[in-house]
Length: 186
Image 1 (cartoon, rainbow, N blue to C red):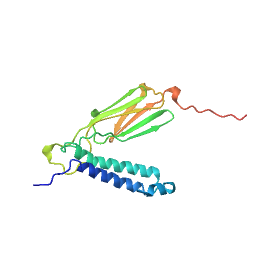
Image 2 (image 1 turned 90 degrees about the vertical axis):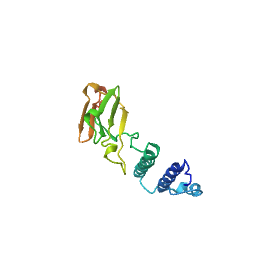
Image 3 (image 1 turned 120 degrees about the vertical axis):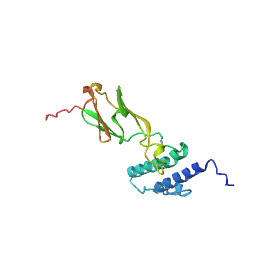
């Protein structure tokens, strides 16, 4: 007869992992906090540290969340593609990382100042092809909605999909474009 496993064992493992990650970025614990908080200097650059923390938390939930809280057969977890947004004088450019997707599985729409990128990444293998031993890729539907800070020209939006990268160029409305004013000597 095997010992009964606590239903909270997976949460305990996740909590320990989060504590380990947090201790990497916060050098004090317990009573040290009050006496040393004023003298604290970060071990790493704040931006670099926060990015590393985000990646580590993502990894934790990818590792513990998907397999533990899903049905275990597939890796269909909520996911969203990574985005880059650039503002130019005349337009916004949104790039979405969508490797392995087909053009017909992606939609782009614009309503007022909100651009919506949606789609579905379909699994590329079936259970008949063998049991997965390690899964990191995410599959399923996604939707990203981005509200732009200025008025845009919806009639001139262009979208291209090349080598797994979706690029959407959204021109600014004429009244929203940056106007350079020439200075004159007095």
